[in-house]
Image (cartoon, rainbow, N blue to C red; front, top):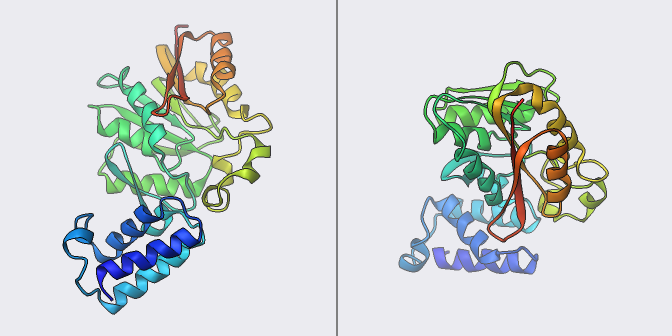
Length: 278
C-alpha cells in the first residue's frame, strides 16, 4: 500500500470514530511509524510502505479510533519547544500551560531556586531550568509513577539541576524558593465524568480532580506556600477558565501583593500570580 493510501485509510477511520482533527492525527501517526515529515505526504505519496510499517500504522489508528490519546501512542509531546516523554501516569502537557512558564520566566533570574508543585511529567520545571542560567529546581508530586517519568525527562533533556521529591504537597519540602509554580488538579469532581474520553479514561484522575469545587489544591498551596517563599518571592498558579476571582481572592487574603491574572491564547483566564513580601 502506498503512503498516500495509508493516510486516507487512517483519516477515514478516525473520522468515522468521531476523533477530532482526524486529518492531523492520521498524518502524525504515519510520520511517527515511517519516520517521515509533513512534506512526504505531498512529495512522496506514491511510494510503497513496507508491510511491517503498514501493519503498525493500522494498529495505532485502531487505538486512536478507540480514543487513546495521540501522545500515548507516540510517547512524546512537545512543550516549550522541547520533547517530553509521556504515558498514562502523567497529564499530557498542554499548550495553555506554556503561559505559566512564560510568565514565570519574566521574574526568573540567574541562580534562583524553583519549586514545581504537582510536577507530573516535569515539563514546567524542566522548561524553566532549560531556558535559565544556574537555577536549581525541585519538582514535587505525590505519584511515584509521575516522578519516575519526570526523572526520565530530566535525563533525556540532560538536565541535572532538577531534584524530584515524593510529597503530599509541601509535606516533604525543605528550604525556600524565589519562585513556586504549580498546575494543580482543578477540575470539580462532578465534572470529571463529562470530560473527553481521551482525558477521562487515559489521564490520571489524581492530576485532574480538584475536589468538590475544583479549588481544594489552591487553598492548600496558597496557604502553605508562604513558608517556602523567599522574601519577595512569587507564586504562579495555572487555573481553570472560571477560577480567577476565587484564586486571586485566596492569594490576596493570604497576603500576596500585586496579584495578577493572565489570559491564554483563547483569551480565557489561565494564570494567576502574586508576590509575597513577608
